[in-house]
Length: 65
Image 1 (cartoon, helix red, strand yellow):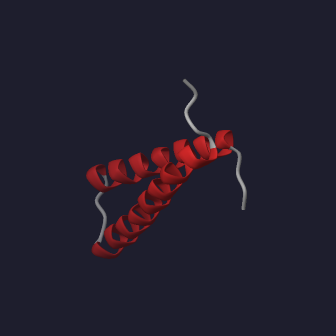
Image 2 (spheres, one colour):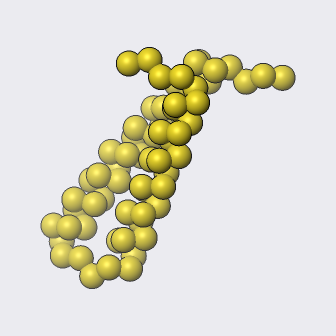
Image 3 (cartoon, rainbow, N blue to C red):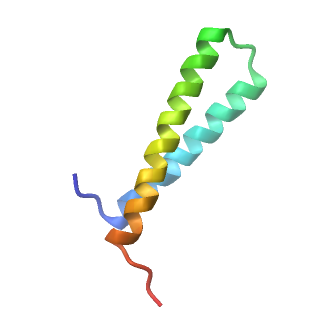
């Protein structure tokens, strides 16, 4: 898939929002071990996606000086 730089930035923002929501959920809710495991696994996957997109963004849209 080819995403525009703007699309990647929107996706990154959505990923960051979701990761923050998961972190808040882990801190504030009374979750059982399975729920904690599921949320943690999902959060790690989203963080990995975010890192890959951040690495790809400069090659798609080099910084303008």
